[in-house]
Amino acid sequence: MTQAAAERPSVTGVVPAPIPLREIAPWALFGGVILVALLYLVGLDQGATSVFPGEMLHEFVHDGRHLLGFPCH
Image 1 (cartoon, rainbow, N blue to C red):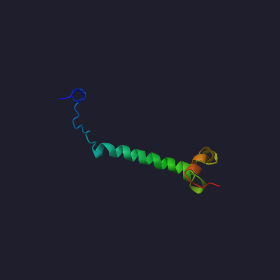
Image 2 (cartoon, one colour):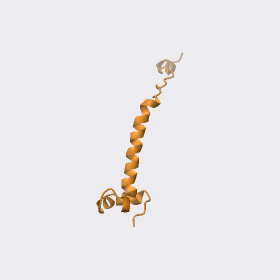
Image 3 (cartoon, rainbow, N blue to C red):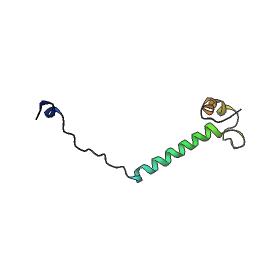
Image 4 (cartoon, rainbow, N blue to C red):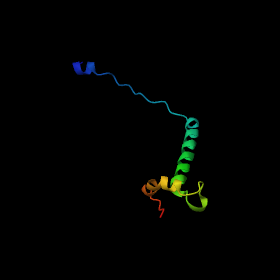
């Protein structure tokens, strides 16, 4: 055995434990609802379906709207 081989730590197959779907599903659903709500607020909250009256929300997310490709003018 060489000096270099003796100094190297032995590598064993470390496999992470799988995460059950029952633990991931509630968080994935929560994240999906939050993302859809944010998408609505940035892209679609304007006009007849507006949740908040006025132009305040529109002006607040104006640059983000253009960045995501939503037309607003």
